[in-house]
Image (cartoon, rainbow, N blue to C red; front, side, top):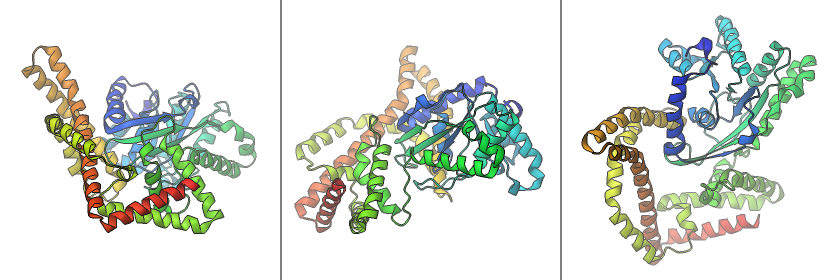
Amino acid sequence: MSRKNIEKYDLLYDLLRKYVDFWHNNIYYRKVIVYGKENVNYSDHNIFAPNHQNALMDAMAVLCTTKRQPVFLARADIFRKKFIAKILYFLKILPIYRIRDGYSNLKQIDETFEETLRVIKHRNGLVILPEGSHAGFRKLRQLKKGICRIAFMAEEESDFKLDIKIIPVGIEFSHYWLFRQVLTVVYGKPISVSEYYDEYRTNQPQALSDLRDRLASEMKKLMVHIEDEEDYEAIDELRSIINGKYSDSFRFPKLFRDQILIGRLNKLRDKNNGEYRKICDEAIKVKQLAADLHLSYRQLSKKKNPLHWLLLASLFLLLTLPAFLLGAALNILIFEIPKLKTKGLKDVMFTSSLFYGFTLVVSFVLMPLYLALTLIFIKPWWLAITAFLLIPVTGIIAWNWSLLAKRVIGGFRIRRFARRKDEKFADLKTSYLDLTQRISKI
């Protein structure tokens, strides 16, 4: 696969992608929730427009939840080294040049446009992140006009016969870089560029602005968008305090619950600013106290931590300790080596991208080795294959074991705080209950 035929189907790429999708959707994330699949018609000429907060993982979210072989546009500076460029072309990524990159790149701008036009005509699906750069905030920033300009230029080149659809995409991560989190992807209703043909013919700048504003409006409906910069930390924390327990919900995903919560807080800010300020201040207080006492909101939400449950859970952890040790031993290299590589990053938003990438690469090396060892030491062959397939399962079991251990430790810690009548814990419990009651009233 080269840049010149990037829109063509590639068998090797397809085989690699199957493994990439599996690792992304089943190992790296514990759950991937996708809404709006019915809004994507692969027979259309589609341009996907996702929000951009978590570096390369935003592109992966689209890749691993769509069909066919979409092509991505990325900033041109990462293509400078020929070897890297060849890898990126194989991965179906094209450079996007801008005038400000220098007039020497005008030829490359024309070439990239020709290639994107072929991709659109071939119905692969073109993916453009319209914010232009990533930022670790749950807020849609000002969109660049590039995505609209490409759509109109492609239509103009084809005598306005393509009827390109721009599909807004909302992406939400339960945590930006922790392992085994929940990813939610929402595909919105397509925006038909044909609706703006007449305006584009008479007033191109206005058509570009109107299409961009329409796209931004539709994207905000599909994602967590916190407009209030002054109280961003408080509102972002309230999402976890109030809705954290719904992270795995598929019928009514946390993303939609967060949108409702943020909408009601916005109304409260305008209607009763005094109450709004109390809620924001209380949220920051709860966050700080919970962090100081090493307690999670899920533990705080429990009215009781029964001693008999904690003892039974402790016994279960003790009996299943060998399973934890086995899973940890078999998977420690896959997940611990990447942690060393991601420490000290200048841009922490690349943590998840690099961790996912490194675990994927390390697994490529270790999994064949594990397969060879199981076939050598375990007979018959079908039992060896079964043991091999259980290796990633044991890793997930070990991860769940560690989660249960944290919950049990937290439960004993809460009982100890309550027994000693710890003032800080009493303050936390009172503030938490007061906060949840205030939220329930709105």
